[in-house]
Image (spheres, rainbow, N blue to C red):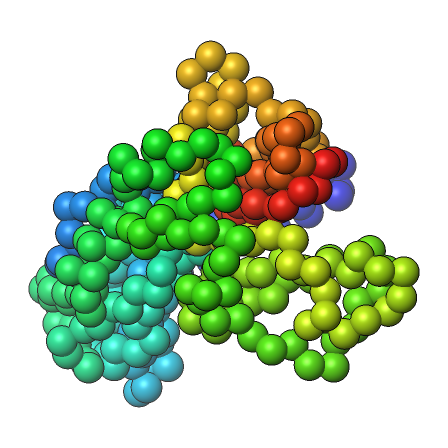
Amino acid sequence: MIKKTFFSIFALCGVALLLSGCSKDDKWGAVCHIYLDNLPPEYHSLAENLRNDTEIYLSLDNSSTDRHYSIRLTEKNKYTQDVSMLPGSYSVSSVYVINKGLSPIEAVTQVQSVELIKNTQTELAVSLADPTALAQMVEQNKPTPEILSESLYSRKVQYAGAVIDLANIHQVMQFSAVENKRLSAGEVYYIPSESHKGVFMIVKNTTNATIPVMEGSFIGVRFSNNNAVFPTGAAVGSSLEEIANEKTGLLGTPSYCLGTPLIGMGLEKSTLVYLDEESGDRISFEFDPDSKFVNAVSYEFERYE
């Protein structure tokens, strides 16, 4: 009984402290209306998970009161937020975009400080540095007739609007020279591209000895951004339903699955594997534990497994 009473009092005190903390800023009526002012309409055609994973972050700081406010503009709040603050002058800092699957995007503000006044709403606009580039990127990532005409295991991929041959990707992109790394027999390594973010060359030690990573056999390519579109239109950002639905999916039922079959339930990573029994090529669609959207795609040559 004593423990229950103590816990109830402790909880009530905590709630009271939280409420007092919130109302302390609310009572002055100084509101900062922060919003993104130039999001191109093409952005809304992106896959849902790419939009949900995109965050525009900024900080507002008042050195005289030691007040710090962190603001996140997201798909959920429609890239706008009203923040009740203590009146005063605030510096604007740490303006950037957080995203997992999109090409680099930069955000800026036209002012370096903002003045919050009692009983007044103050506007603070955040802008994309290059909204035209974002719109072009979205358009480039729509499947073209050329990629849709290719067979699934053609070793072709549409990247940033152009169809390329995966077997010759080293002629299109530059990859890092990995020094002081050795592979044991059968070990696989992902060499990142220096020229294209989110692209990796997959190499494997197919010998029985330990070898330098740069002597490994080139066995495939991995993409972890949404610039790559595969035949049928499957891509990073596609949903589980879009890809694997038995009747309407872009690829239908996979050859087999790795990890948990309970995709998106926060248990562990899942991978859907599609295997071409004729060539041995396989395409793997990876899912994070808490998502039902593809976060990476790998195309591997002659794996037969």
